[in-house]
Image (cartoon, rainbow, N blue to C red; front, side, top):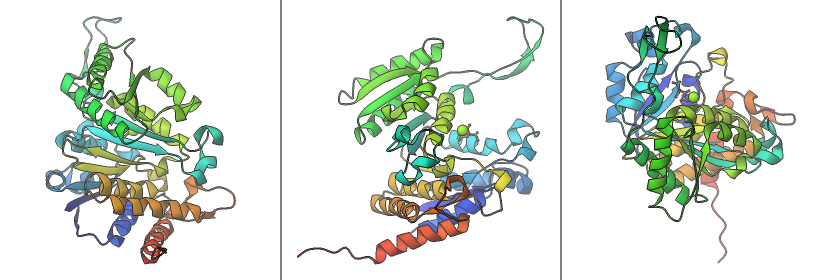
Length: 367
Ligand code: IPM
Ligand code: MG
C-alpha cells in the first residue's frame, strides 16, 4: 500500500509529522511519499496543486493531508489560492463521501462550550457530499445583471445543483453507515425553499426503500443547526449536501470540545481515501509546537479502518488516544484546570508511548 503524504501549510507540517510517527510505530508494510500542496506548493512551483502532487495522490492508495491556507494568499486570483488544492483533490479523485465523526470523549466533556449533560456521550457521524452542490456547480462568475432587483448593476452568481446519481450514492453511504451504528439517518435539506434540496429529499426517500431496517427523518438545515446545539444526542448519522455539511460539521466540532479532536475521511467509490483533520492550517499558531495533533492521528485511524483494511490497528490508535486523554495530557485547545499542558510533539510522544505500552502488555488469560 502506498500513502501520499501532503502536509501543506501552517500547522499542517507539525501535526502530520506526529501522525506519521504513530503510523510508523504500527510497523505495517507501507510505502510513503511526501509532496508539497497548498501555499507551500504555490511558493515552490507557482500552483497550489502541482501536476506532480496530483499524480502522486492519484497513484497512491490513500492520502494523508494536513491543512492548507494562509491569509497572505487571500488576494491571489482564486485558481492559485491554497484552498483550490483540497477542492481540486476532491474533484479529480472523485472523493464524494466525506465522513466527519463528532465524538465527545468523556475526559473532554467540560471542554465543550455546551453544558456537559448535553454533550456527554455524544457520537454523531456527519456525512457530507463533497464533490457537488454550489461548491462546484457551473455556471458561476461575475457579470452585469440583465434582470433581478438591479438590472445593469454588477453581480456575482454561483449555481446550486445535484444530479440523481450524486444524491443516490451519498444516500447509500449514509444508510450503510447507519447499519453499523444506531440505525438512524437524518437527511438535512432546505426543501421548503430550494428546488435542489426538494430533489435531494425525494431521492433520499427513494433510496431509503432499500433500507427498511434504517430509520430516516428529514430536517431543514436551519432547524438542524438549532437542534445541534439544543439536543445534539438526538442525531446518529446526519447526511447532507456540500455547503450545509461544511457549516454543520464545524458546528458539530465545537460540541466535542475542540475542532482539534476531529478527524475526517473523504472517500471515492472504491474506498480510496483522503484523510485530514477537520480543522484548518491555523497560521496564527504555526511553528510554535502548540497545535493539537490528535485530529490527524485519529485521521490515521480512519485511514487504517476504511482504506487499509486494518481494523485492529485502527482500534489500537483510537485506544492510544483515549489512553493519553485518560493520563491527563492536553494541548492548549483542550486544556483545563488539573490536566497537564503539552505541546504538539509531546502529545505525539504520549500517543506513541501508549501504543507501544499496549503492545507490550500481554493480556492475562484465565486457564
Ligand atoms: C472544509 C474546509 C474547506 C471547505 C475549505 C478549506 C475549502 O472548510 O474542509 O470544511 O469549504 O470544504
Ligand atoms: Mg469547512
